[in-house]
Image (tube, rainbow, N blue to C red; front, side, top):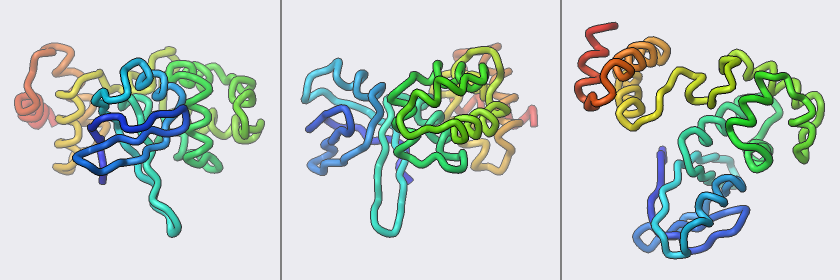
Length: 197
């Protein structure tokens, strides 16, 4: 499974980017938010995009995101019945991740209906399905899921889950540890979290 791809931008437009990685060009579908981030640099700049791969019988499609937070929002959206990858990408092109959070917690059906291809029923389904997955604080999706920013946290969480611990218990332990000691290394965070669980 692909987590991210890093390389030079060979081609960029609002719908997709081609990233050249050691002579291979990877075409990734992107949102307008990711396009804005990538467009700030020059054509031959190095870019790192977080990836989600959709595999179907007739196609293997890559979706690229400028941040883990945006990818997490995309994955939450496509978990909703009736919301496919293209609809999720259109939603993330129409609003930022923070605006998406606020629309869900604020029951803002009108904001979703303003997105092309999203009707009232789909808007209601998104709000109902995702409301319990985020807290009504207006924070970003990842913060609402209890995930402080940082590579140490991400790597330690992935390791604990792979070791068989529940995601919720791992998140709780790591959040507590990292808030008390933000300078922890990945190894120390894992070791200390293991003692707490």
